[in-house]
Amino acid sequence: MFKIFVNSWKIKEIRNKMLYTLLILAIVRLGAHIYLPGISATTIKAYTDLYSTGTLYNIIAGGAGSGYSIFALGIGPYITASIIMQLLCVAIPYLEQLSKEGEDGRKKINKYTRYITVVLAALQGIGIVLNYRTMMTNPSALYVIVGVITLVAGSIFIMWLAEQITAKGISNGSSMIIFVNIISSLPQAISALVSYGQEGTTGILKVVGILVLLLIVIILIVKVNDGERRLPVQYSSKMAGRRVGGGSSTFPIKVNTAGVISIIFAISLLQFPETISGFISAKPGWLQTVIEVLRMTHPIGAVLYVILIFFFSYFYTSIVINPNEIAENLKKNGGFIPGIRPGQPTANYITRVVERITLVGAVCFSVLALVPIVMQWIFKVNVGFGGTTLIIVVGVCLDIVKALESQLLMRHYKGFLD
View 1 (cartoon, rainbow, N blue to C red):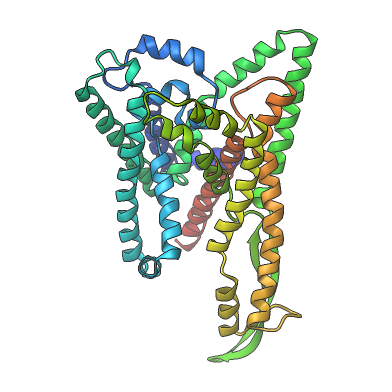
View 2 (cartoon, helix red, strand yellow; view 1 turned 135 degrees about the vertical axis):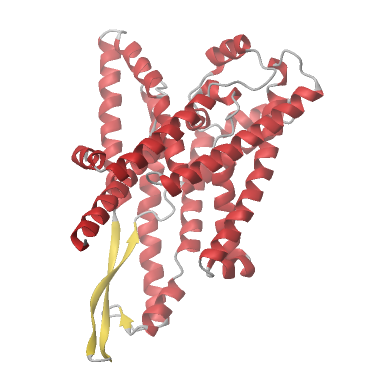
C-alpha cells in the first residue's frame, strides 16, 4: 500500500490531484473551528467538556466542538438526500427512466438531490439553532435566522467541495470528507487510551484488550468489504461475424451490498426523537425517557439497532439487486447458470443466493456496529471510535488505494500506447 502512495507521488498529474484533495480537506477542517455567529466560545468549551460523549454524529462532524461551527451539518444532508433519491428512483417511474438516460439524466437527478439537500439542511439547521439558542450571547430572532442561513450555506459549500474532490481529486469526495473528520478525532481517542493505561495493571489490560479487539474488527471489515459470492455463468456459442461467441464468466454478489448505509439509516431512525426534541424548548418527561431508551447503550436500543440494520440491509439490497432483471438479461445474451434453467428458475436461484449472502453480511455488520457498545459494557470505557467509524475509515482507505491503483494503471497503459 505504501509503495502505491510513493509511486503515485512521483507522477506529477496524480501528485497534483492528491495535493488538491488535501487542500480541500484542510478547508473543511478549518471551517469546523469557526463557530456560528452569536455563540460564546467559552460557553461551548464548558458545554463540550461536560457533554462530549464521542457519539457517531459528533465524530463524523469532526468532533464535539464542530457541532457549533458553520460546518455543523457537514455532508450529512447531502448523503441523506442522495439515499432518498436512490429510493425514489426505484419507487417513481419518471425518476427511474431519468436514471437510465445517461449523462443528461444523471445531471437532472443530481439537481433534484441538491434541492432535497437544501430542504434537509434547513430543517436540521432550525433544530440545531433552537437547541443552541441558550448558548447565544444575544438569542434574538435575527441571530436565529442568521444561524440557520449560515448552517445551510455551510452544508451546501461542503457538498460543493465534495463534488470538486470527486471531479478533480482522489476517490469519492463525500467519503473523503467523512474520513478526514473521523481521523481528526483520533488524537482524543489515543489520549483516552493513554489515560486508561495510566490506571495501573487493570488499565493496561483494558488498553491491550481494546487494541486486540479493534485489530480483529479491522481484519473482519476488510474480509467483509472484499467478500463476494461469484455465480458461474455460461454463454452458449453463437456466430458474431466471423467469430464464434460464448465462453464462461462469473456474476459477483457482494457479501453486504448495502454496506454502511444500513447502519446510517438505523442510527438516523434511533436518533429521530432526539432530533425532534431540538425543536422543543420545554421537553416533556416521556420524550426524555424515549430518547434514553433508544440510545444504543441501552439494551432495548441495542436490540432495535440490530433489527434495523437487518431490515435496511435486506431493503437496500432488494432495491439495488433485481433478480428478475438479471435473469432476463442473461437469457437475452444467451447466458445461463449451470444446472439452473433460464428465466424464472434463474431469478429464484439468484434470490435465494442474495438472501443468504445478505444474511451473512447483516450479521457481520451488526457485530461490527456493536463494538463500541460492547467496549462500554465490558471495559467500562468510551474511546470515541468503534465499529461504524472503523467500517467507514477502512472502506475509504481501500477505495483510495484502488483509485490510486487505477490511476497508475491508466498512466502505464497511456505510456505504453504512446
